[in-house]
Length: 115
Image (cartoon, rainbow, N blue to C red; front, side, top):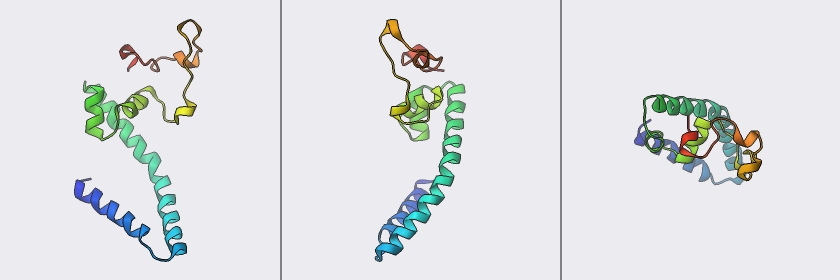
């Protein structure tokens, strides 16, 4: 999608927010949100596939983030297989007392923990 196409989508969403009648505006918002929920899964999967493809090509995580237009942390989460919220992440404890969930392969925050 080009920058122009993204701009047009954004402008269309702005138009929904400008609907004068509050009830009609909320109905339109509800339709847009319901439609986007359907897309989110497909979009996340496509983004994940691109992240893994670029990683396989040898790009650094920072370059991958720039290429796919997301944060470094999101790229790291994708590579670790984490897609939930921060509250769902395994808790890390002191070195001598790490739970199994916090020490699964690929979840280490050290540079060697990246896949």
